Image (cartoon, rainbow, N blue to C red; front, side, top):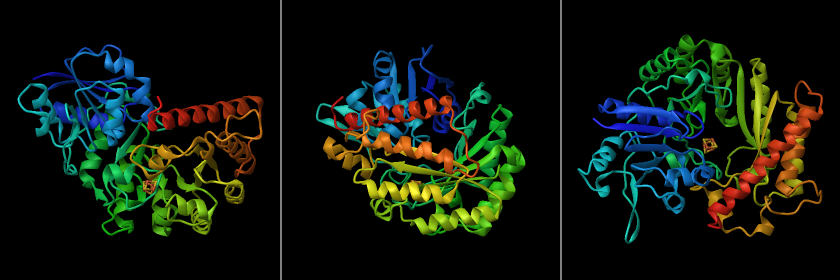
Amino acid sequence: MSHVTVVTPEHYNYGSMLIAGALRDLGHRVEIRKGFDGVNSGIVFISLQSTIHLLRYRDIINNMGGFRVVGGPVSIDPEMVFRYLDVDLVVMGEGEDKVGAVMELAAGNCKPEDVPGAAFRSPEGIVVIESSPCPMERPLPLVPGDISREDIRGASVYIETHRGCPGNCTFCQVPEFFGRKVRSRPLEDIIREVRELKASGARRFAISGGTGTLYGSSKFRGIDEDAFRDLLRRISEVTGRRNLTVPDIRVDMVNPKILEAISEYTNGWVFYGIESGSRRMLRKMKKGITPDQVVEAVELAREYNLRVAGSFIVGYPGEDEEDYRKTIELADELMLDDYFVSIAEPLPGTELGEEVRKLPEDENPVFMRSDERRFDSVAEERAFNLLLESYVFRSVPVPMTSRLLKSITEEVRQQQEHIRTVTWMLQGKL
Ligand code: SF4
């Protein structure tokens, strides 16, 4: 039995709890920690969610002793991980069924080549070992004692009901990380897990997995309303409907039965990925939806008394003033209950990431000069203006105060700095 620590830098993400659960079931003494303070075991699994973590935690990770393994979304690009981190192994993609082999490697009982899904340095360069997706039956997660204090965009925990998405959105890592075929977990396993999480203190649950309504789907771009309804009904029996939410829904993957289930068994919100009001940009993002579908989906949700939030992306490469104007017009027309605005983030392993890697700065809205001197870029200006406007045209307009204005300014400035940094990281400039 070994002493192992699973570390997640900022939030207890679901993947880290799952890895910790798999290690516990193998008989190891496992700690799960948020933040790197006090890590003193000889074997450390590090779950990194964001590209920026490679830079932000580089010095801490590189100065840690012991056998260090990195997993999580950053593992999609092991070359990039090894560019920043001096670690022993990267486990690419789904990792919970690989931890046994990793522990054998840490004990010196096998070679890195024997670990499926591993990436490691060799004198010839970085070697990647192929692997298959994990089975959907899985161990119970190891839940940290302070999970009740966790707050990830309003939820204590995001539970995974399925993996994979048939979508093809150029900015999203889900299809690359989990594949395009939807694989759903057995419902009884999900319920057992929700009970365990609740008993350990988790209060507010969100369903993750890319597009929530795809649970149980077995055909390409199909939805299974009965499976989805059963899923929500059974989970809400444990959590209470007010503590359950289904973020991330495609506007072309809802219908009356789906919305009725959301209305009946959740806190009554739908979160649509709208992204843009410009058909041209939606095509470029390969989102596979039109502004008309957005309008219809919002109207349909309102028929079920649901509150509707929408997420928008601005500053996508190639977005011009006309595209942006169409996004503002659509956002205005929809009068949503809440708006989320993001500057397009070039994630490794995505088509957008590849485009931005080669894009000159004078064609990248995150670097293109804005006519307004208070903004560092066109992207920052657009994100600021859309967010600002959204308080006027939401269903219940919110009066602008100096405090709110300051918070919008800071949020957008942080996004701008974040996206510039990850762009430079992708381009190998940092
Ligand atoms: S953004 Fe949503 S619909 Fe598009 S690929 Fe990702 S999970 Fe699928």
